[in-house]
Length: 183
Image (cartoon, rainbow, N blue to C red; front, side):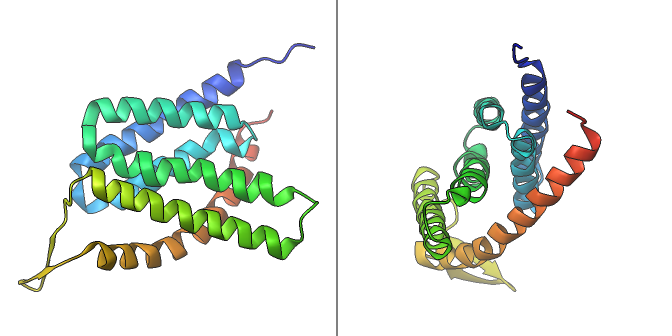
């Protein structure tokens, strides 16, 4: 029996459309930048909930290209941090973790080191490409200079909360998608 790819393509297209809308919206609504990038990352997860890794990658690539063409550099946080991390986390948490040849503690250690290394590399690259967009912060009328390490430390603390939260949301998204889409 020949496998039909129309289902995967359709789910990926819906996923990409939602991600593009969220990324474009985050460029215009400053207060919801992080929340809309998280929604875009959740949209990228839609094909992955059905185990369609090709569809997830296709959705990420299409949404990255189209959103970059629309909002240019403002799409970099999604492209480099949120969207690509959704694919990487799925591969590590739901594919690599199932490898039975390695002890559980070693798998967890490898996954953690890869995730932290990837986060650090992408954050640094984003910082370099955006050309130090944020160099001062205003707190109660006082301006403070911020350095790479201060922002990286704050964002790393948020990342330590973001990763387990996204894993929990992905598991619930799988349950929801399996109830809605019967295939």
